[in-house]
Amino acid sequence: MNKFVLVAIAMAAGVVGFFAYRLVGSPQHAEPVVAELQRPASGTPELLPAFSLQNREGQLQSIQDWPQKSMIVNFWATWCAPCRREIPLLNELQRTRSAEGFQVVGVAVDCREDVLRYADEIGIDYPILIGEQDGLNAVNAFGVEAVGFPFTAFTDAQGRIINLHIGELKAPQAKVILDTISRVNAGELTPATARTAVAQALAALPHEG
Image (cartoon, rainbow, N blue to C red; front, side, top):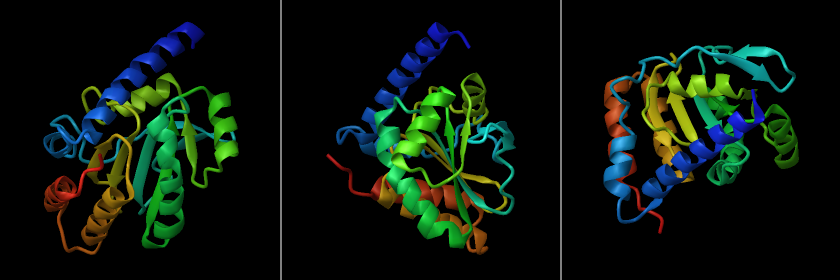
């Protein structure tokens, strides 16, 4: 991809991500915006979209290579400050919740060299898929308008999308989402009731100033 085109894409996505993050984190607007963003848009597919990108080793790998896992698919970029801040939490989720069937996969929409260098520097413990335009295409497959980074999709063990989270993921939010998905996997909730329960629980969380 032309370097100038890539920079333009990065700047545009960064602006969108910044304002999405500010809206989610702002005490004045947090409650209604969070409630809106947590509901899958009308164009959001029921199942995790199929896409393949290069992994760390440069091999093409499908997001469907983790069957029967409850997926935490995190779209990020090295130039995105909120993305960098949430990586330690994602590492922790991979360590502490993998035994429950959860799998974190990072999808870096960024230059491959920058991603590999940063992943080694910070110590990312979960699988990474990397793509520039192909990564943006994967984001668009979720049917969410004006999505920014970070952007995280959560599924149950059958690949059904339970939650789409725009903005930096915090530990209390992750607990709400994953605990609810565990109830779906146990047959206690349907995906539809789980989506509603997650939206209501997230809106009720204390908002950070």
